[in-house]
Length: 355
Image (cartoon, rainbow, N blue to C red; front, side, top):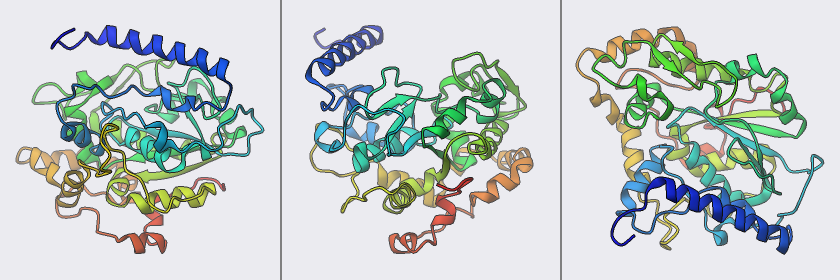
């Protein structure tokens, strides 16, 4: 292509053909070959610098797909397994821009194949990856149409890891990278008008939904995580995006403890595969934005009060995760040692059922 970038359609076709080829190789070479890393696209060689990519990943953007290097995955248990597998399965859930890709990268880097990964994107089951549901789905709406679907995951010992994010931060992030909510973020009245989500529970038979505003999208999706366990998943761990960024070691420690996983001596961070320095380039910027609540400056004068009023009906949900719609009440600083002493656990974990 010379200096021109290939059209996205050709890139997608190439990746699909490559996956099929590698899948065939997997069948020929046997089940011990680490196929589990193939679901994410590799990073483009001509990406203009690491900073933009790292910033998007640590800021929770879904556009930042991270391909975990084979050496970093440390696969030691990979094998063909059935429903009798003793390992827990994990299904990441979360609205767009809540850090779902960041969490997946962290899990794979630090726990490898100690768990099985479930996601709607995994169409070809392997020893580590199985088909789940759309990670951005509204759980309540999904269960209304598929009342028994989540129960099958519970029978397979699949635990939901649900990410939540400060609504004031999430609103500004979704305006920057809206994905399925693109029609809801245009115009100066984007926070005051109704928002239609065409795929509230994924690309399936669940009908579209129109909500009063974007704040209601955050509130209804977050509140619906209470329905993950009763008659559904084996268990649920609620993780704040802010804790994943500010306290990744403590967050991974809680996941390891609850799922009985071996915690690595040194927690790994996702970095550009081509680089070997191990620095999480975008994390520092993300930390500053969280601790200073820099996103509050993006709201015009007087708009914060209006947003807070619309979030009032979800006040109990916000309080459950320590969120406030006012600038001066950001997440307090908690050290790694405090997190390991369980002072962070209440905010990191909310179990709706015994694991």
